Length: 107
Image (cartoon, rainbow, N blue to C red; front, side):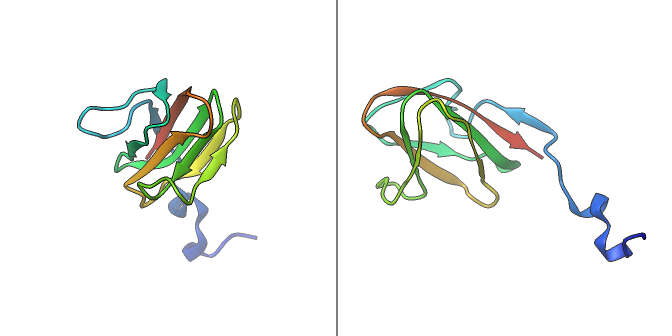
């Protein structure tokens, strides 16, 4: 059974065309990125749909500059986060300095 035209999957689903390993700040932060007890701002590229992160130590990620509330990404795990209309977010170590490997999936 064919789908009605208004539900055409090919015209509705966007798939990432590429990826980049830096943010869009004036001085781009590149992967791998060292992090510590100082909050870092990550500027999301305008054409990014998702960010994939893999920290070497537990990492806090937040949508507010104070870093709280936050989501904890456990060390050596890979987490994909949809960034959609997000323009920036903030990262800081949980307890130990580390290195973040990351990339943005772009449209």
